[in-house]
Image (tube, rainbow, N blue to C red; front, side, top):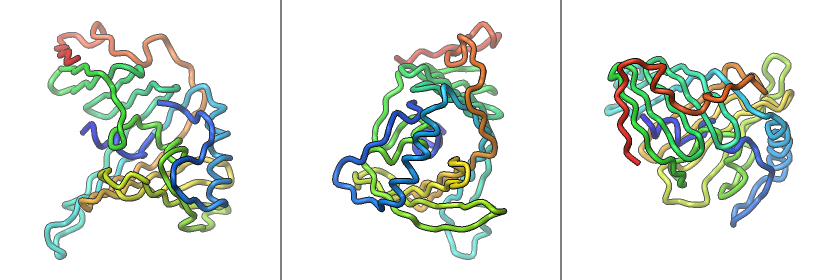
Length: 226
């Protein structure tokens, strides 16, 4: 389950830290300009919370298989501040203070503690806002008008061809410069779509927002794997 949330954008530790086009990537200047505007907006937030839906589509075994048997939808909430994040699901929580990550499984009453390490395949969810800054080429894939709003889909391809995914589509509301969705295309045929259903900038935080306090979970077993 960890990979679902740390591999995507997709899919949501640094809230935008600035814009830079690096590496050997070649990008559409129109996409570049739009992404910079989005970057500037999110960079101004001290923190961000968002409700989301993760739609998972697994590759079918046979073409005649029912699509519904290979699709799942998970709802949750994510809280972001700089390199820190907290993801809440119905039966799981992922909490990261930038150095350590706690994975809490409700039904097992167990929390595992690990060091958090980023790589090309594993990164913090907020990279949904910063992926284009380094190691990606990007271009405008689609433009459409929805309810009077200008919606733009930007296709991003990783420079590193060894990662497990081959592209990410980021959907942006050009009217208010919000990221609406991020879709990760895995080489194995799986697709992960993160849809941000509600975003609240600059929420009120407390001192324990990004740590796991075992005292608040009576009977929890702490497994420290660091």
